[in-house]
Structures are given as structure tokens and as C-alpha cells.
Length: 327
Image (cartoon, rainbow, N blue to C red):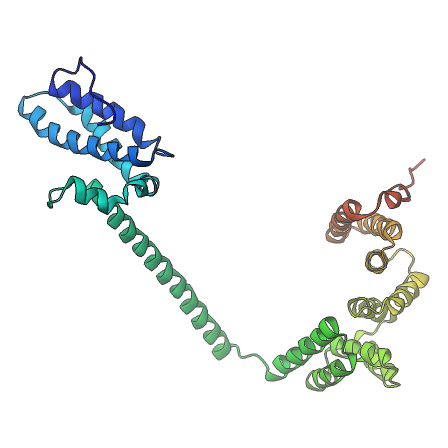
């Protein structure tokens, strides 16, 4: 043993208490002990040997019983650390073969097998839970499709719309996107987004049909301001910043206090790295939104302002137009 029993431990009960105390320290200080971690298992062997002897003498071991059960629980809890340290002696199986050639070893000599079994059960349970979730999700999707079927025209329009957006954003392929947006509009002629996207691409390609597409979107919206606002977001998304700015200027010319137009204008400024103008636009949008009780927009504007203030150059920060103070 690495730690000899002190001379005063004259009785089996005294030895048991000393070894309990020593084991309690060992089990929580396993890190970097290497081969010395084997002492813990040998102590457990001796404790298990002493226990029936002391009970036969009629000694009251009730206080020690709680400590013994707690110690065993701690050994199981710290099994990964113990197994890791025992690699220094070739692993737990090799140590067991050396210390217990027969089959009389205590359960602590089989921690490796017990740990692997627990891990297998854990992953099996996890796999079953995941499989159950996937199955439930599949059943729900099937039920929704069965009892609330999606209009095939909506699915086809969405598929082509997504394909067109991907071609523009990833490849800059406006010509390829044109066919996708035309197909989407043919499936869903009542969807204003399809006509606006189609018109934006047509304008990029100098296609005279752009005005017709925009006219159809205008008819669906019933408002020039709404058309300019929606079209500005698509222009910005497609990198057509001049066109987006023109639409937003058109809105502000008739509605200078339109909080959403200022919010979108900040996106155009930010894309051009005009950080001072972008921050001023967000401040203005937040002020107007609060005045109009558009709390969600006000929060979004302030949130974006905070992010932009962290990214913007210092000289832009020094030039932010302050909010006028009421007299």
C-alpha cells in the first residue's frame, strides 16, 4: 500500500475508519495520480474484507455505513477519471488480472465494463428518443399534408422564387433568375412578391417588360408608397442600391416621416459603408417609430444602431447627428 496504516490503528474498526478517510480523499483527488490510483481499489478491497469481520464482533458500524455507501457512489461517479489514471498500469483489466487472478473481485474492478455498458445504454436511449422525435415529426408532416394539403401552385412558386434568389445571391446570375421568377409569377399571379422580383430582374436586364410587372404589383397593392417600399427591399437584396435609394427617396418625398423608409434607407447606407448616414437614418427611424407607437420597429432600429456603432469607424461615430433637445 502507498499509505501505511498508522501505528495507533490497533483494531479492525480503527483500520476501517482510517481506510475510509483515506479512500474519501483519494476518490476526489484522482487527477495526475497515475499508478497510485490503484491504491484506491486496494483500499476498497480491504474495506470489503474488514466489514464482515467487524460486524461479527458486534461493533456498531451505522455511522461508517453511510460513509461506505457514499464512497462507493463517488467511485462510480468518478469512474472516467479513475479509468484514465489506471492507464499507467495498463488499464483496469490488466490491474484486475494482476490483483485478482480468480473471479472474486469486487464490483469496482469491473468499472470499465460497467462504464461501457452505461454509455451503450445512454446512446441507445438517445437514439430511441431522436428516432421517436423524427417519427413523430414525420407523422405530423404526413398528417398536415393529408388533412391540410398545400396548394401545389404555392409550392412550385416558392421553389422557383427561392431558386431565382439563390442564383442572384450566389452567382449574380440575373438572366438565369429571370426564368425562375417568370415561372413563379405564372403559378401565383396574385402574389405581389413574384411580380416585384420579376420586375426588378427585368429592370436589371434592361427588359421593357419591367414596367408591366411593376404595374401588376401596384394593382395588387393599391398604393405607390407600398410599391416603393417593397421594391426597395428587393432592390437592396439584389445589390441594386441606386434603384433602392430612388424608391426610398420617392417615399420620403411624399411622407418625410415614414419610419420604415428611414429604416430601409439605413440598410442602403450601410451596404455602401456610409456608416454616419446609416446611423443617422436608424436614429430617425427609431424616433419616428416611437412617436407613431411602432414599438417593434423602434426596438429593431435601436438594436441595429447598437450593432452598427460597434462596427463603424471612429470618425463616423463622432459625426452622428444628435437628437434635438426639446426647448
